[in-house]
Each structure stands twice: as C-alpha cells, then as structure tokens.
Amino acid sequence: MVVILVYVGKNLVGDVLLDGGLAINIITNSLKKRLGLQIPSPVPFNLKMVNQSLTKPVGLIRDVKFQVHGIPYIATFTVMGQNDGDGSYIMMLRRP
Image (cartoon, rainbow, N blue to C red; front, side, top):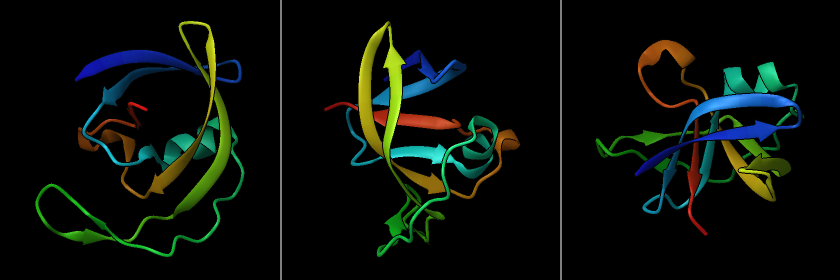
C-alpha cells in the first residue's frame, strides 16, 4: 500500500491511500463537503467491511476529476459516513 498526495481541483488532499486490493474508490462525507463536491446519488448496495460488518454508504459521486503527480484522472467515489478524526484515511483509491 502506498500513501500519495492528490489534487481535487485546486485542493490538496494528503495521505491518500492507494491500494490495489480495493474494489472501489472511497471518500469520507466530511471531505466531500470540504471539497464542495456534488450531492451523492443513492447507492443500491451495502459494503462488507474488513471486520465482516455490513455498512450502507452515503452515496456515489460520479466523474470526480483529480490529479496524481500532474496526471489527470476521472473516477467514481463511494461516499462513506465516517468522521475524519477516527484514525482512518479520508480518501482511498483503488489501482486500475
């Protein structure tokens, strides 16, 4: 696993986890608000977490434009409701 810096628009997001084991891209609801991203669309699924519990995401945000080392990307993010201060990453990217 690698931790990188990501720009979403002109906003720098530090300590973003890049993990090839992830099936989806994840962003916290509080980071979504700070970045001024659109209101997420409903999610038709639950996620099984590492501890095997099921969690309902807040929603999906499609076509989020971001840059890693100056290279532009567009991705869909699953918005999770956890708080930034709970020790987890505020953004996680899966490897394509």
